[in-house]
Length: 114
Image (cartoon, rainbow, N blue to C red):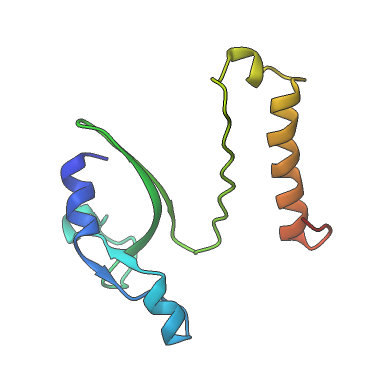
């Protein structure tokens, strides 16, 4: 999205939808400006979105968002630089990450543990 749209969205936050008021207050939702809503998409107002993170540049913003609140982020750090070989099919690094995704899916289905 444009940086202008992003800054407009994040300046208007409301409590989340959790039935527990303390949790709802902690997990803020952001109001989507009416001009960005598609007519007929939903009668619910205000339309909101959960933004878990964003990559902001001068010309564009990529947001990690989730309307349902079921998003799970796994953040891994690394001391060395990333190389193309790290992402090649069969590499140890790629296996680490794809294995983590498979495990997360198993937990969501109730058939595994992390």
